[in-house]
Image 1 (cartoon, rainbow, N blue to C red):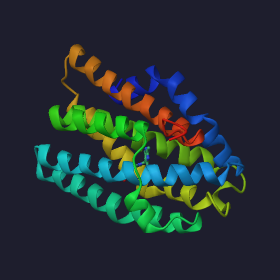
Image 2: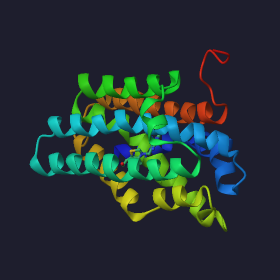
Image 3: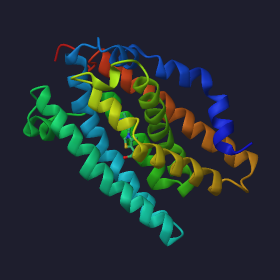
Length: 224
Ligand SMILES: Cc1ncc(C[n+]2csc(CCO)c2C)c(N)n1
């Protein structure tokens, strides 16, 4: 069994809960309150800025030119494609580019991005990949699950999001991260694998928290 298969199997319960969060299911049904999605878009834009830095750190920690090139490409795609989609999408919800640039990250966004950057900066390349994998992997699976719901991919507000994350390009990114982690851990000790499992579990939990934060539009203190 590869390490990614072990992770996937072991974390199924929390993984299912993540995919069945009302934010995700209501997006698939097309019933999600646009205000919640609006909140998500702004926070996700801030998240992506920090997430992209992880690819830059990955490029600097890579031990061969091929891996370095893939991280550089991911940095480019995230900055210039995924974030461009956010800027376009934002317009549909009446969010200006200025609002995106000036928004404040919520405590959950801060906690998630700072944890990933901490692991990326202070750990090994495998630690970094274990931290970023739940993001790429879970969005790919969610995109695919939502895309088969009749009409979901054509929804005027959420269809584009579903089409993007179920696309071949995102499938390839997720698969590349999975393969890289399997390659890096081929000869790892059980103690090392357990450390990586903990990192993967932590960012999987943060994925759930991110949906939940957006669903409840949580920005403590709520009355400030
Ligand atoms: C909270 C949050 N988690 C995951 C993603 C998805 N995502 C971000 S970067 C990337 C990899 C390729 O660019 C993917 C799939 C998101 N947007 N927001």
